[in-house]
Structure formats: structure tokens, C-alpha cells
Picture (cartoon, rainbow, N blue to C red):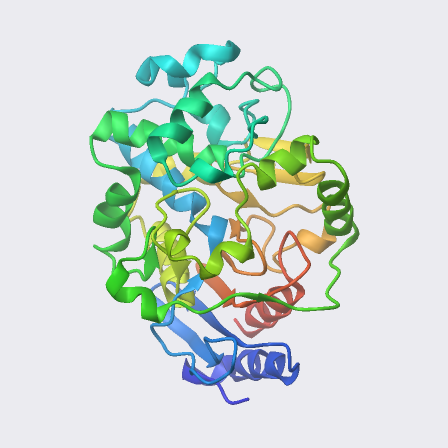
Length: 381
């Protein structure tokens, strides 16, 4: 299948590899963008945005990119740290007194952003029926007891991260978190990344579907087995209570959902453009960028049940796990989204990379499709 878009001659092999993905009849649509500094060396897309294969994928097609938005929320918080409205090592409860319930009085912003807060999941009852009610969910989160003492263990805040950072942004800035991100990050830099799609843009949203036969790496298979078998496991609760799943991707409530840690709709160019702007110093200063990309936690993550390494709101290259490697430099950083989307950067070579797809795979970290494209892009540089 021939991809549309732009590609410099040096990256023609990357474009061809992207096109070959669609030799699999299960593939529907997707996009790829690579930037070196502010230069876009490849920004291509192909396939269809509907399940029937009748609606072509366009340059402005939006696709569910789920948790790839977590670094946006992190950078928003770091902007407020630069302004003196937030501090990394002051307890969250200083800004949000109700959060001190359940032994959480010592949890700091740094703990939350490095996924060591001890509050990675919500226990029963089932919170799915009210997940779109922001006030209800932050009240639930404020009352939730710790799972462990902050800083002592590692556990990915699948949904809790977005509500905690979002509430802190709102309490210290006054704007809702997604409004802040739109007005301070995405809109000024022309980034097609939406944290809550406006109704007049619903027609641009591509439809997600799962591919059969893609079982994923051993860690991914183990995680899915646990989630399927044990409803009370901490991982199951983190991913299902409430659940951020591809099944929601056809629901207009999800399209409009404003949850700055789990719900986003983007183009590949929008995601890569975020990292390009970040590396260029247009979002936060050098000191905050160093904090963002510095290792803050490393070890077996109790939610992913695999070795993970985090900065402040970003996932970092994990040498201990070949199935999670970005296939670029050793200091790459970024974030995955459920089902295959990913965006990351290599500051040493000033490369920003993003891959988006509507065909959900079985890997919980970087998808093999993206790994192959990233390796080819790195070799072409």
C-alpha cells in the first residue's frame, strides 16, 4: 500500500517499511512521523480510518493514543514548578488537603510523576459507571488508602496519575488541566493532540480494532493472564477500575473525555512535534528538562509486572528488557499508548519519533511494528 505524506530521500527505506505493514490484511490505518530538530524528515500515513475500509486515512485523521499524553501532563506540571506554583517535593496534600486521607499525607508530586506514589490503583467498588465525572473520581482518589509507603516500590499509575496531576494543575493554576495543556502546549505549537475532542471534530476520529494472533512478549502475556484470572490483583484494578480499553474507542463520551493521563487523540505529527518542541526548549527550561529526563525510578513495576524505568512522567529506555527497547540511543524517553501508539525522543541526536495505529497489537510496551521503524530511522540518520 502506498503511503501519502512527505519523506526525504534518506528515509525512503523507512517509508517502504511503513508501507509493508499494510501487507497484513488485518491492518487498517496508521501514521508515522520522524523529526530531526525542527525538520520533518518523514510524515506519512496510509490505510483507512473506518472498520469497513471505505474511509481513507488523511493527514488530519485523529486516532486514540491513550497514555502517550502522560508526558504532556508532566510538562504542564513542570511549567507550574518553573512558575513557583508547584514544588516537586512538597506533599500533594499541601495543595489538595483532602488527599491526605488514607495515609497519603507524605506523597509528593515527584512520587506521583515517577510512579512511586503508592497509589497506582483504586480498590473496589467498580468505578466505571462514574469515570467521566471528574469531581467524583478525584473525591474517590482523595479517600483511597495507600497500597505501600511512597518511594518504597514502583507501580504505574495507569489512571490515578492523570487525576492527581490534573487536580494539582487545576488547584494551582485555576484552569482545568486539559485547558491548560491546550492553551500552553498544544495550541501555541500547532500540535494535533487533543485531550478531549470537540464534537465538530468527531468525524476525524479513526476506529480502533484488535488484531488476531498477536500474542505479545512474555511479560505482556503474563499480565493479560493475570488480568483475566484475578479481579482483585492490583494490576487488574489499575487497568480495569475504571478501564481504559479499545472497547471505549467508539463511544463519543470517550472521544470528549478530558483525562490528562489516559485519554488522547492525536496525529503522529502532533506527538512527534511535542518532543521536537520539548528538546528545543520551547516548553520548559533546561533545568526542568533535565529533571524530566533523569532516572527517578527503576525496577520491577508491580502494575506492568516487568522491569520499568521512569523519569518524571516519561518512560525511559530499559536495557533489562529487549522487548521494550526503543531501538535508538540509550537515553531515549517518551511514552507508549495502549495497543501500539508510541512517541519518544533521543536528545543526543535530536530525533523525535511517533507511530500511531488503529490496529491494536498484543504488546504492552513498544510494538514490534514501531520497533522496526525506529531502528530503520535511527540507521538512516
